[in-house]
View 1 (tube, rainbow, N blue to C red):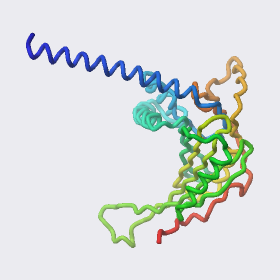
View 2 (view 1 turned 90 degrees about the vertical axis):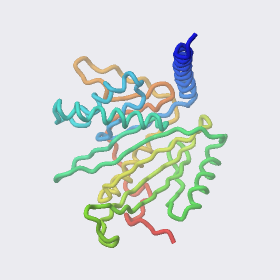
View 3 (view 1 turned 60 degrees about the horizontal axis):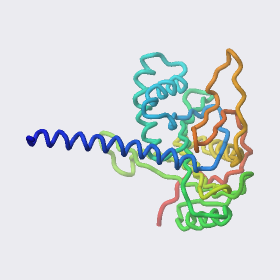
View 4 (view 1 turned 45 degrees about the vertical axis):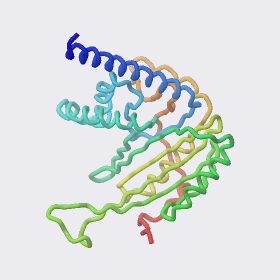
Amino acid sequence: MSDLDVRTETMSDLEGLTETMSDLDRLIGERVARTVPPITFVVPEGIHALPVDASAEERGSAAADFVRELYPGGDDTLWESAAPYYAQVTAAMATAGLAFSALGIFGLDGPGVAHCSLTAAFLKTDHRDPDVAAQGTLATLTSDPLNDARWLDLPCGPAVSCVTLRELALDLEPPQPAEEQPKLITGQIQVHIPFPTGPYMAVFTLDTASMEYWGEFCDMIMAILQTVSFSDPEPEPEPEKGGTAGEDGTAGDGGPHVRGASVVAPSGTVPCPAATPPSRQ
């Protein structure tokens, strides 16, 4: 047998092993996903969920559907050019372990839009008591003086919110003195909710650079959190003939059950500091 034949057989064996490992990873991922207890929450209109639950084979067509929803006033040229980008973004979000990832686009009275991102991840923990888990999370987050971490009592149980603000300097051409560089302030609201039904932590994260609407985004995520439930979701009614399917979405086994609806936030329920990031001493 020649060296070429040996190398060919070796490469064939490696390719077969890679396929076997991919199948094994997929099986393990599906089994782990099924162990996550049920969780449901409601998102407002204007939140557009990426198809993170789509398989690799389905991702292209799912991204194509997503861009048509995101840009309803677009045309084939826009949709076809944007779909590959959002397919890559979806793959990155799914690989990062996010069970839910969405873009929030909200029209204004005048020109422009207010925008944000919203994600949900479910992390394995070893807690048995959600109250103890929340207390430990609060202690950890408050150890950083730049975090505004606070206790929340939600209808679904104890939770901890953490608000952080960041100031970023924008590099422009030609270069400008540091004191003259334009600054971009971004805000993040992250809420940790221990599952009362199993050793998992739900982590909701909202990021935005539309800081002129910071208060509205604080109210919006609080309204979403008020709808979080760890009970089994009720079956969704079948859409009427001629209606539009797909307004409600499910992320599959172990994923969140998400309903699209208008939610009105109670004012002042999430503690939001002024939109000026503190400096580290």
